[in-house]
Image 1 (spheres, one colour):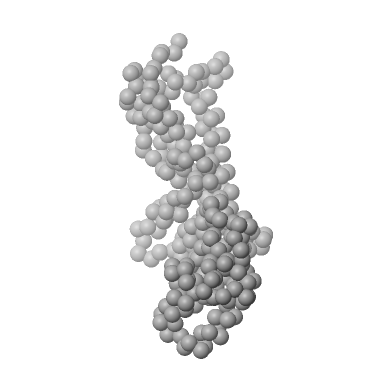
Image 2 (cartoon, one colour):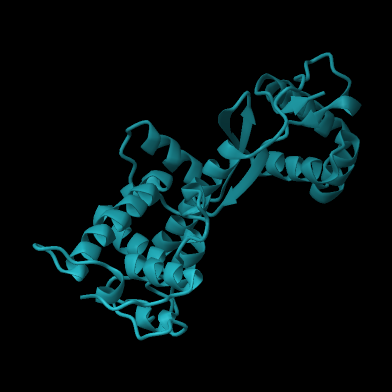
Length: 279
C-alpha cells in the first residue's frame, strides 16, 4: 500500500519535469532533492502507482520515452537543415542533452529551440582547443538562422498595409513590418535553400554572405544581398528614412553621389518588385 505524501504543486511539477527530461541524471540534478518540501520523504513509488504487470518506474519510463521523443521531434522540425548537416545520431545527442540542461518553461513548443544555438556555442567540442573547427561555426550559424525563420514566420505584425510602387515618393518608402537582415561567415542561406529543395548540399567552405528575410501576406521570402546592400538596409532599418540612410551610406562607404544614385535606382526597382517597401 502506498503511503500518503503531500507535495507542493510547484515542487511536483519541477520533479516530474526533471524526471522526464533527464532520466539518466546527466545534468547532475537529483530529482528527489526537488521534493525537499514534501511532508514525508517521497520516491517514484510514492507518487506513481504500479500495476500488476509494471512497476512505478516502468510506467514512468514509458512516459519518459514518449515525452522525450515528442520534444526531439519538435527540435527536428525546427532544425531540419541542421539535423541533415550534423547527421541524425549527432543531432539527437545534442538535442537530448540540450533538452535536459535547458528544459522549456513555455507551453508553446515553438520556443523549444530558443537557446539551442547558444547551447551549441557553449558546448562546442573544440572549446579547449587553440585552433577552432570551421564546421562548428557553420552549425551554430545555421541553428540561429533556422530558429529565426520560425520566429519571423510567427511574428505578430501589421499585415493590412499598402505596398509601395515605382511611383511612390522616396520620402514615403518604409520597410515592411517583418524584415530581418542576416550576416554570416558561411553561405548559410544557400545551404538552407539547397536542403529545402532536396539538393543534398555538402558542408560549405567559409565565405561571408548576407541575406534578408521578409514576410508579406504571411509568406516568407529570402533574398541574397551584397555587402553594400546589407549596409544600406541596416542604415535604413535603424533610421527608417531613405534620405538619412543614403547620407550615412555615402559617408560610411565613401561613395560618390552620382554613382550611388545610379546604383540606388537599380536597387530600388528590384526591391520594390520584391515587396521590400510599403507606404
